[in-house]
Length: 153
Figure (spheres, rainbow, N blue to C red):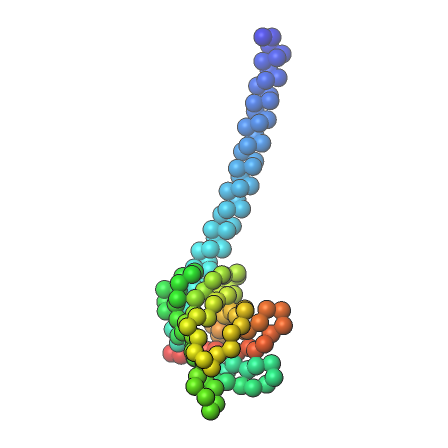
């Protein structure tokens, strides 16, 4: 093998190693962003623990008193609390809450074991705001109702 061929092969090996290093750095950087987001959301999910109360209003203007009780150990896919919506002249709507996804400060959940006075919906979520209030919204795209809840001291 000539010196020129050896130098060419060395340059190719160095170029391949450099490309692998750039790709690895990009993958690690993207993963670190996901890890930081996940850690941040984990801290925020702990802030959900406690009793929250406020008004929930349907888009037709009907207001209801709402109470949400969440454990401090909420985790994806596990029942972590309950909600209760007081309905005049009827039994309250009650259900268990299971967080199914987290995006930023929005916690999408399923309501299970609903009482007969509840109406099943396909999409509902909590959103933790910077002022430590909790938004409860029903409906994706077109809202069916919204509430602002405050943590009970």
